[in-house]
Structure formats: C-alpha cells, structure tokens
Image (cartoon, rainbow, N blue to C red; front, side, top):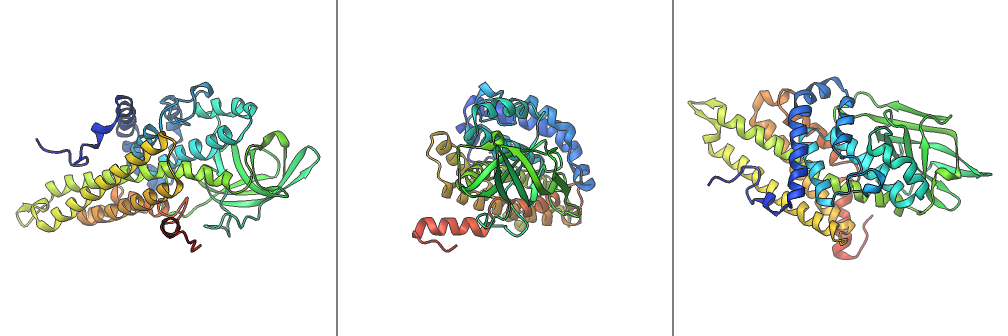
Length: 387
C-alpha cells in the first residue's frame, strides 16, 4: 500500500477517535470555507471576520477550557490539531484563534476571579466578545521585563498609561488583556476597548499576516476599577504563562502550513512537464520533496509527544521552545522550497507557498524569536543563561 505523502509514519493512527473527529471537522471547514477566499483576503489585507461565528459554533475558541464556561473541554492534542488545520488555511486565522483562546481566555480562567470567568468566558467562546493581548511594547521586543506601561492605584481604580505594539486582533477587540508595571510588580488588567483614553490603530503596509488584524494600542489615563484586575498572578510569570499556552499551539500550526505547501508542490511537480517529462521525475525535485516529507514527519512526532506531555501535566516551557523553534523553521524552509518548485507560478497568491512563506516570517518571530528559543534550550542543557 502507498503511504500517505503527508503522513508517512501513520501518526494519525496514534490519535484517539475524538482527536481524529476534531481534526476532520476543522479540516472540512478549512477546505470548504477558508481556502476558497483566503488568497483574496491576503491580497486585500482583509481578515475574514465573517468566519468567526462558524469558528465559534465549532467550539474552537477556548477549546481546552472547561465546559462550565461554555467551552468545548477538549484536550491539548485536540487544540493542537485545531491550530494545525487552521494554519493549513492561513497563519492569520490560526493567530486569531490562538490569541482569543490562549492569550485572552486562558489568563481570565487561570488568573481571574470566578466573577470574571462568568462575565467573559461564555461570550468569548461564542465569539461575541473578542480579545487582544497587550504585552509587547514598541521598544520591548524580546525583553518584556523592560515594560514602560504602568498602572497606578487611585482609590478603588487603576489608571493605566502606556503603549503596546504588534497586537493581533487589536482593532477587532472588545477587551484587551493589558500587562502593566505597578508598585507591586507586573499585573494584568481586563480593559474594555471602549474605555475613555484607549485607542487602537491598525498597522498598515504589512507584507506578512495580511489576512490578520495587527494593531498598536495606546492607553492615555485609562481608568478601570480594581474588579478588572487579574488578582491571582503577579510578575512576568503571568504573561509568560499565557505565552507558553499560545506557543504550544504555534508548535502545531506551522505543520499545517508546511503540509499545504508540500502538497501543492507535490501535485504541481506531477503535472508540470519540462523536457518531455514531469519535473517530479527528476532527482532534484524528488530529493526536495523527500526532504519536505522527512521534516514534516519529524515535526508531527515532536508535537504529538509534546501534546501528550501537556495532557499529562508534564510539559515544560523548554520543550515548547524546542518545538516552536524546530517546527517554525521546517515550515518556513518547506514554504520556500515549495515556492521554488512552482517556479514563476509560486510568486502569486493563486498558489499558497508564497503566502505561507510570508506569514511564517512573522510566526517564526512572534512569541519568542528563533534565537530566543535556541537560547532557552542552550540554558536548559548547560544550566547557564546567555540572555
């Protein structure tokens, strides 16, 4: 029997029936609803907001959170498969779900009060309340501790001033999870985006993540009551805990982009005739395709083990760093090779590799650059920090 080109080690057989059902449901959605429009969305720099109700109806927002808050209560592997299939469509769509689920719903669940959970999580799961995550600052980058945004206590309120940059969903959001310096360390706040003094500006002229909304946030004497503060965490471990959850999804997502590029290059190579034979019959192209298949297989096995560790409560941040580093790198390399196999056709959005390659330039950078994750592993194996 011929092996499936994108699953040479039958990794799918290692999934449970529920995990396969989740993957199949999201895959159908991507095939039927995302792929027909996403090339145009990318070209037009338009986020397909019309898909949000369907995404919510499938239970993809906050999918790993408990059912008592209107969420699906799925395991970590299922969440990873959701990210993989969505990013097979486009990184921007997976980014939307990652931010909503891991960077906004997760901190409310993990660090918030029961009142905050009841107030926000069900509406966020239904897609009625969209969130964004305000951590990165214009000068901050890989050093989140160098945070200038600050919150000062004023009676029973907090007054927040500062700016955040590269914020996914910023101009879509109804609430922002804003991290700010206080006299008692870094703390998180749930800030309604219609609060006086809060503004969001779309970042234009992007050549990556064009089917995603990226914003700058400005907070000018934004006043929120203490009931909007996330009380159960202080310090950088709060936002970094959120980032670990989001990075976990990112370890899966780029596999979807890689599979999309590999599959399109494979099909094209079988049909493209040069010198009286398909280019798939040449050694050079076969070696490239074989290398893609090898690296996809490595990535699939890596994230499945990571997901099993997560579901067993044993996942460590350094393991997430290794998987994000590895899988973003393999996906970006595969997208570039696929573009090369497609030749001139590969530079148009009629085919997916150039779109995925451009998107992956952001994915390999955000939520920890490749270098940062390499240094995390370096610190883990040597016991010495080089930061």
